[in-house]
Image (cartoon, rainbow, N blue to C red; front, side, top):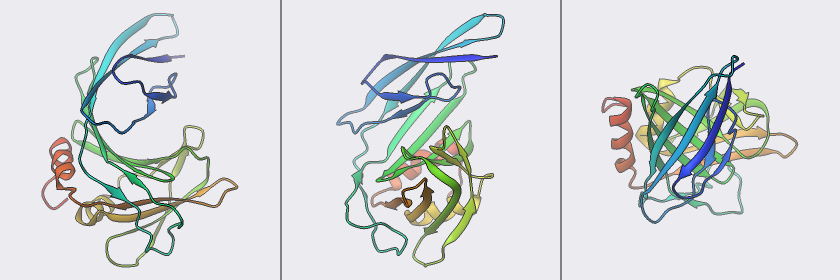
Length: 216
């Protein structure tokens, strides 16, 4: 059995969960300036041998707005949402691998794009318990709604796709106007609304980190 332990050692205080898992999950607050944060990861194997490494990253203050798009029929109504996209880059002290993440926040959860050494992935994280992994989404100016079944993980608060859908990312990067909807357990639908302006700043940083060409 391999045991994991994460401990924040410096920087602005973050609310962390899954501190005993291989992947750390934490909430990123709005910041008015770039903030450097460090976590220490200690891994212990079955023979009680352990090793530690420090993971450093920066929470960047990006002057961009994220607003609710309430025009899509699947979207919920009656609230306004205003968060900034968060970009963070971490370098592993174990193998030197570099991970860049972009976190797009909305009322019911986050849409996360992660690039590790040029290999991209994405997932949805939510504070609500999900029901069955069914996802519906609309991206761009047309009204086409796509349906997929994603995996539920981390006590049903993470939704992971069954593989990497290049078309989804291409459509998202060409439009940045999207609605993702998922089923919440015993409480209806959860909705992530993305309608961003001035987003090329983030697009360029993510393209560089993911080694993506201009047509992505």
